[in-house]
Every structure is written in structure tokens, then in C-alpha cells.
Length: 228
Image (cartoon, rainbow, N blue to C red; front, side, top):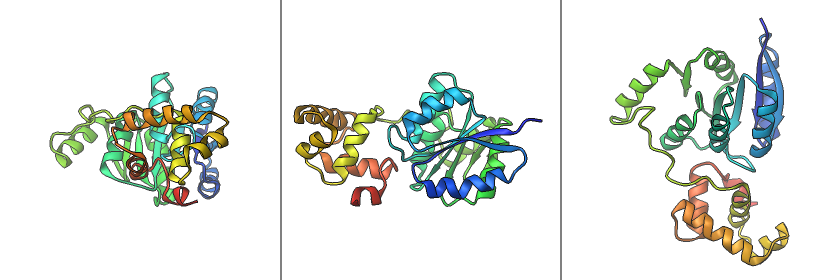
């Protein structure tokens, strides 16, 4: 029986360095790729066709939930396991809606991820350590959240930000001015303003501060990244 091929996507090497040896210790699991950027992971996953993609939510390029959604949109069959440092029910909804097969807080022990790799490749769903069939997951969500089920979870109420918009939002989180951002990216200040207007419109917020808070709450931007 061939090994399960796994791709790791996280821009913090310490997380990959901690998980990789644990996965490689399993005879039936092979780590075939490691990426730290959402856009690069999207392209690489289509080339490698791994059995499982393990992705953080907060990534440069495109965030992990967008990555899952885009992989599903192009017909990629890889089962996706989403991990996040900012765990909340709303983000869980969006991860499942995007097409994730498993969802964990980032403090999950490695053994649970090892088990989840095998479970999701067999068609199961794993949410915070609990294993479900699709039918059972729908029932669990309906009981836990009353009117919600996997098929009834509303779409994320914003349009996905482009990689350039995410890049600009990270600079804004660091307190950079439009002039500084324009210089850093080699674009005009008017182009930065245009991107900023698009960000505010997509997130349905009124100003930069609200945009940054929105992104931090959803784990798109880490608090420590905003401080740097």
C-alpha cells in the first residue's frame, strides 16, 4: 500500500519543523512538499496532487481558507486540514464551507493530526478532534448551532482579498502610510489608495483600523505581525 502524500503549508518554519518529523516517523505517511505562501501552495498542490494538504489560516499570498476554496474550485481532490492560532466557531464554519475536511486549533497535539490524515483520506470529517461522517457532521452542527448545517452555513460575508490587497493590509497593520507602502511595493500612492478602497468595500468596514481588526479576528494577520 502506497504512503499517504502530505503537503505542509505554514509560513512559520517552527510549526513545520515540529510536525514534519512526527509525520515522517509514520510508515504510511510521506511529506512531499512544504510551502510558506498561499499562492505558491495553490500552484504546488495542483502539481503534486497530495492526498492531504495541512494549512494554517494566516498565510502570505492568500489565506488558508481561500486556499482550500480555490483548490476545490479547480477540482483538486486533496483532503484539506485547516489549523489556526485564532480558533472560533465562525472561522470553523468558513473552513468547512470552503471545503475543509478537518479543523483544529494550532495547539493540537501531533498525534491527532496523524490520526486525522488517515481519517480524512477515508472520507471522514474531523472537527477539533471529533470524527464524523458527513451526515453525522451535519446533524452535529444542526444540534450545536440550531439552524446551521454544513450545507446551510452562509458563505463568508466578504469577497476574498487579492494577494496584493492582503499584502497592503499587512503593511497597514504595521502602521505604514500610503507613501511608505507605495515605496515598498514600487507602485503609485494612487494605486495604494485604490487597493485600500477595494479592501474597505470587500470587508464592509469604514476605515483602516476596522479592516485590520477584521483580519486579526479571523487569523488572516497575526497580532505579532502587526506589532513588528
